Length: 136
Image (cartoon, rainbow, N blue to C red):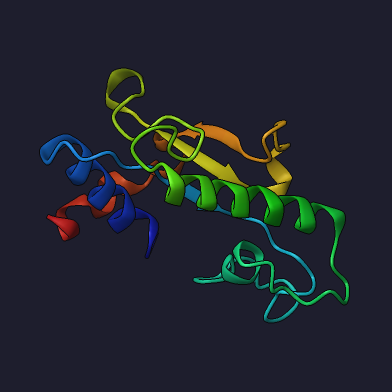
């Protein structure tokens, strides 16, 4: 919740109040060669070696290589054409009933053909209502 709630708030404010195109992704993939210690899971910036392809090759998994390639392609495509194709998924504000799509880079989520799964922000924001007053 420490990062998810403020990220949701900033994404929604930028999209709905300022009318800016915003894409949101959620990285929830833990690999043995990037874990700080057994059982710790995902931590802030744990996606960096996967995004940049600089993860240790020792104990690397096929899923890690796949997620890395997909994330590198998404980031490069976004840099080339951020207002056109974007990242390949719909921007914040394009979902139904005020929700918005979030691309989940989650090995456990059964990644689709593109290497990510689209989820609604409500999946991540389920506890946001409790913390919302803090972030006003």
